[in-house]
Length: 339
Image 1: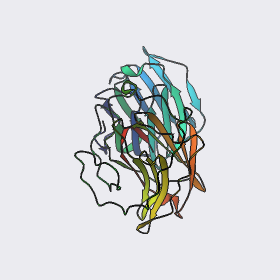
Image 2: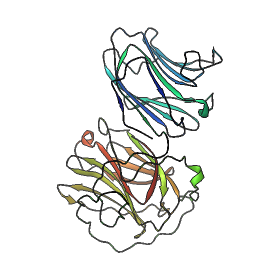
Image 3: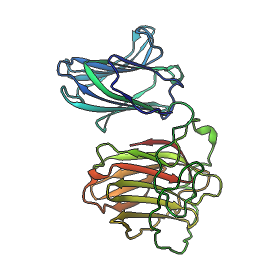
Image 4: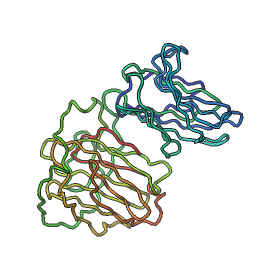
């Protein structure tokens, strides 16, 4: 569960993962590197004490011009891994994101992927985050802890989407022009295995879901959405990439029409729909898991579903950086979002 960011905490910083760490836990650290800094470290530990085991030690060494990562177990350091490249600069702000998966820790700095580190200590032993060094912390946020996520602020519900219990209906966008339902052959290649609730951790994001895309979009930026289609006669769900003037990209699987609609909402009106389907057909189905990757490229958004390329959508707004909000709503169980 995310309880919101911890603002302006002191350094050294220590935080207990109240419900442990699991697949999908995301730590977001925003701060400022003080000019005298020689080294700083972020640790995923098996206890709060200095000599407790460290499952993942991320250590930026300005004095060596390198980043070192390692594991300490029973007061002994393991085999060191390092990169002679500094993703942080003295006297500058930074954003660091550490995504925990069942296989590794994935670290990005200022929205650029930096490293992956495979587990040497089981995740169930990790219970503490520590941050040390010559820096000022502006915020630390931990997403993916505990049972469920707090309700996100509501956003407009499109016509044809079922209203989720407990969520107020906001003013809806004007309806898009109707089209006759299209039929497509089923595809075993595109459709993943049937939904198994046991495959998902207990924590799910609340739907409707909304989050900021800090810094906006840019070429090679990837948004990852993992979840499952609802099991009770799903009709539709949508993913919106928004900016102040509307929706730059609307991705809308429609089970009631057996198609996926792509569009934009600019100057208070919907644009021309795109409905061309991949040769594999409709790649979403009731109760099935999915992983959606939206890759921002120079000319278009590229959408992959479960590793298969589904469609491209040419940009209709002049500036990618103004696209600063991700919204998700509809008949989905939302497990993890990475922006």
